[in-house]
Length: 224
Image 1: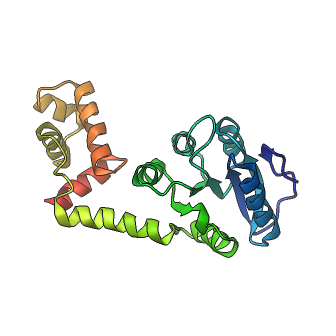
Image 2 (image 1 turned 90 degrees about the vertical axis):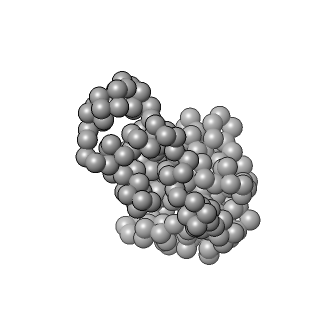
């Protein structure tokens, strides 16, 4: 059986989706774990009530899907997602939370969550379906959340070029990099230090919501 703050002790169930849960509300945690244990589609392999236990536990167990709340007692769920993503831990994060504001939503998605479900919509059949959708490569979201994500990105694209928020120098940096120059060569051509151009790159990635130079260059070229 599952411990209060640790891994599931059962035998591996062939074909079942291995799921961990990070949730500090013990009543809701018990409900989620009971649902996962009762479904033939899922196997509960870990349950955690704080980030300090969740990070090493998930890194060790490597569940297929991790259900995670954002309001944990010692750190945010976004912090947990970000740290495990940086450690290259192969699990898909599905946020289950009471927070439905844009700040938490986009912070979680940018950190690496693939789905976002408001707790009041986390009913039994829909939640199991969302877990199954996640392992198939989908991005399950509450309907209201999905509409806001689409409105955010589509609205931004219709209103202005995606590169409009870049400073003049950031635009120059990205223009040089898009022409195939290395970061060091671009720094030399712009007469700035390597450390400075790396700071500009990080700012560009953040503003364009990308994680690599290839993605940034692709967005830059598409916006031209």
